[in-house]
Image (cartoon, rainbow, N blue to C red; front, side):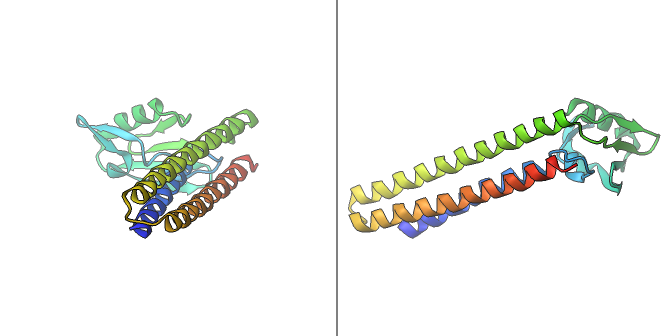
Length: 185
């Protein structure tokens, strides 16, 4: 039973890292990336729909994103969604497509993005520590119930701490990579 608790905690912790990594993809780094806009929601005939379900998104050059909706009637809604979002880009609508030009990042904006990266890393660490606490409580409960001996419980708690340390090291490594990417001129 202890191995199942440890495996479940490991899976949940890795999922928290994956979510953080996906959030990092949506942060601007000075280069165009479809991840900046594909998670935006557009008001598509009264329903909030992800942008990548109503349009094709491409990156024809390093500093431009082109959004080509399958239905021209949604161009205005795409423009509104981009303006309402916090990505800080101005959409250019030219009849059939929306173009987003990615300007180079200022030093101040880079520092703000790094702060956001650090905030997101801390949120992931807190989530991982909470998952560790929940798993530890389950292991201690098993020991109290008598299903597991004290020695096995302590070994499982040590193993849980090793898993937690490994996953937090992944968070730190991914955060450092993203920070370097943002600060790169």
